[in-house]
Length: 103
Image (tube, rainbow, N blue to C red; front, side):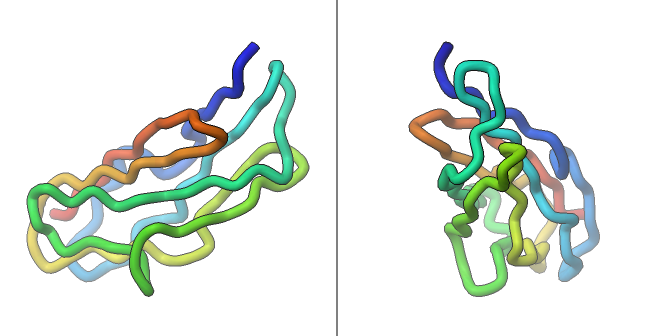
């Protein structure tokens, strides 16, 4: 079975301009088992120009824990304009995406 990347926390958040989103978390599995020690990259895609980004800029890279979870350790800050932002996630060539909203 190929590696899988599952969104486990943080999808579909709505926050006010200038506020922090809750951390984003994923589960990486290989052959159905949690995959620890894997690099996970989180990239901001902001086509509506909200100004949302991780503190210090995108991408944020984390390594999964032994239980296969990877959680952003850098705050994602809502920009100054309302709109939808996509956070693209890549781990071992597998892609997924979070969608968050600045209100």
